[in-house]
Structure formats: C-alpha cells, structure tokens
Amino acid sequence: MRPYDIDLPKTRIGSNGDGGYVMADRFRSAQRVLSLGVGNNSDFEWQLACQGHKISLFDPTVDSPARPHGNFRFFKAGVAGEDQGDKPYLSLLSILSKTDVLNRSDSILKMDVEGAEYEALSKLPPERLNCFDQVVLELHHLNRLADAKFRMSFMDAIEPIAERFTLFHVHANNCAPVTFVGGGERRHAPCSWGVCSRVRT
Image 1 (cartoon, one colour):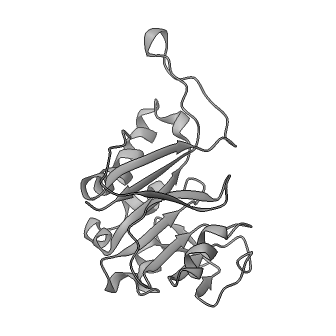
Image 2 (cartoon, one colour):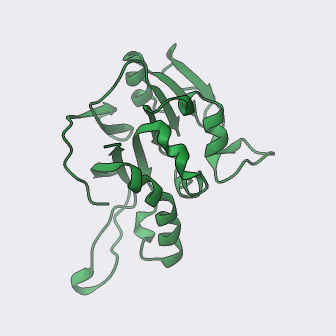
C-alpha cells in the first residue's frame, strides 16, 4: 500500500468528492473502460465517455447511470466471486466476457463495489489482468486488516495486481470512519475505505 513516484502526470476524473478518482494521464484514443459499481454518481464514467472512451458499467442497485451518454453500455448486474444464477451477480471473468476489454491491453478497470472486490479479484485468473493498463480500486473494510482471515483475503486479491501494476496514488475516502488498530507505538488509524490507483509500468 506504499505509493511510488511515476514518470507520468496525474489527473482527477469525476467528482471533487466521493466518486472522483486519480488516474495517470496516459490516455489513448477510445480506450475501453470497465466500471463496476456506479450508484447514483456516474461523473467519472461520463467524463471519460466525453473524451471518447467506451464505458461498460455494471451495477445491480440502479436501473441506469445518473448521467446518460452515448458511449455507455449499462448492465444491471453486480460482481461476485462466482456467478449466482438466481441473482444478478456475475464473476469478474463472466463480466469481462460480456465486454470487449479482453481484446485489448490498454483497458481501464474501476471498482467500487462495497467490499465485493476481494472475492471477485481473488477468483479471477491473474493473466486476465493483462488486458488493463490502469486499475483504480476503492478498497473497503481496511480497519479489519488486523484480522488474519480478512488479511489473507485482502492479500489474495491484491497481490496479483501489485505484481503487474505500480501503485502511484492512495487517498482515504473521508466519508468513512477511522478505526484505531494495534497498540502502543504501533497504534495507527487507517480509514475504513481507501482509493488506490495503479498503472502498468
């Protein structure tokens, strides 16, 4: 979770508050963007769509994006560790197969799925990450990292990404509470939610 300097400018895409994400300013023409978790704020997706990128949006909790755009393709489905036939949830691999991001090596992944990111990412064959150039994740429940079981699921999800992408930006989501972890000199206060931006280098 330690960010590194990269030889690329950074830019914020989306809202000024929750719903905005820092990315490396290395965009190419008409990239494919996979956005998992939209809710009532699609400013991030809308801004990228206005730049000519093609966006596949997945969210089971809304019927459509808050701001429509001709470059949007919306799916009323969420992400999970595996397909759930009787519920609108699909594995990340199944979601990838419904889009054209796998056909490229410069796609963009954005995930803000309220904690479902860990199981979904850990079940994805690591080589499938090779289609992405940038990965932006909102990580949830970080206050539970002291718990061995949760820490294991966290590592299973994040290690394949860390092996392929450089972490260049981290910020806390200030709509989440702070929880103290540890004691004495090792006592620290991680925010429960944090946004991590990574780029292939």
